[in-house]
Image (cartoon, rainbow, N blue to C red):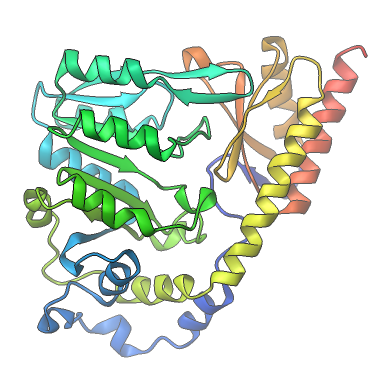
Length: 349
C-alpha cells in the first residue's frame, strides 16, 4: 500500500479553491465568527443570495441557500413528497436521491438513461411516457448527470419541462459550470416554469466541498419551499465570504476547467485504446469507464495497493464500470499509466 493515497472517487476538485478564498480566511475577525448576520435589515437573506440574484438576473427572494446541494435536495423532497407519493429519478444517478425519498416514505420511479456508443443520453420519449403513467409529485433531473457525465441539450430540457409543468421539477446542476459558464438562460427558465427549482453548488467547480454551501433558483410557485427553508439567524457568514471570493476568481477556475478538458481527452485516448475499454463522453469533472468484467476486481485491488482510490460501480447495469474523478494533471497521468500497465500485463496484445 502506498503511503500517500490519491483520491479519484468522490468527485472532489483536487486543485483546491482560488487563492482569494484563502485570503478571506486570513482576514477573518470576530465579526464573521461571533455575530449573527443583519442582512435581513436590508430586506435580503444574505450578501451571497444578493450577489447570486444579480448574476442570474432574478429577484433576491428567488435565491435559496443551503449547506451544499445535498441540503437543498433533501429540503425540497421533504417539503413536497409525502408518504406514497411518487418521485421520478434517473436510472443511473446519485444513490442519495432514493435515500431522500425513502426518508419520507416516498416511491421512487426510475426513467432511463441509456448507453449509446461512447456516450449516455436521456431517453426523452420514455421520460414523458413514464411521467404520464405515474403522475409523480416531484421529478428529479440531473444534468450533467453523475456518474454518466451526460447533460440534457437545452431544446430537450425545454421539451421535458413543458410536458411536466404541472409537477415540481428539480434540476440538479451540481456539475453545470464544467459544461458551461453561460447563466443567461436561468432567468428565462424561472419565468416560464414556476414549479422549477434549479440547484447548484460551490462544492465541485469551485472546490469548496468542505465549506458546504449550495444554492438554488426558485420558481414563483415554490413559496412553500421558501418558507420551509427559511433560516431566521442567517447562514454561515464565513462560507458566504469564501463563496463570493470564488465567484470573483474567474480566471483561476477557467484555467482549471481547461486542464480538466485536456485530461478527459487524455483518458479517452489512453484508456479507450485498451482492449475492451470504453471511456464515455463527459462534461463534468469525472469520466465513466467500462471494462471487461473479469478485470474489475483485480484492477481495483491493484490500484488500491498503489494508493490510487477509484470508484468502482456496483449497480446492476454498471457493475463493469469505474468512475474516475479528475485530479490534477500529474495525478491523472499517474492513474492512467497505472491502469494501462496493469492491463498490458494481464491482457495479451
